[in-house]
Length: 155
Image (cartoon, rainbow, N blue to C red):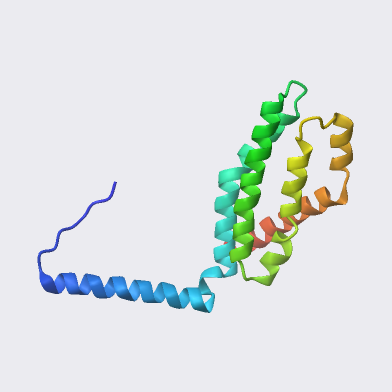
């Protein structure tokens, strides 16, 4: 809940308008110069993404890969992982830091593999084969590198 202060003075209103215009101008300058997409900004976006999705991805994947999983469980997991991948793709698209992009660019294929992992009709043997692919391992390693990079940047 936010509180609002009502100002009746016309000079105070002009100051507020000038500040608002300055804020918009500063935002435009930062946007044009790329200051809004620094490594720290990208890492903050990544941490927000991680907070929103990591535990839930683990949960839906666990449910979808259990022996009792239904096709509905698998479809929910696929949809959720696809949503996470799309949100992560946006973070990567907005990022400009080369180190961040280097690690982050390796992660989306892992989400695609997760989506395949829970396809209806996927047997445990098929899942084991998929787990052993280099794409899955390299994506997980890239994620670990990104976490390390962001930890060093933010902490």
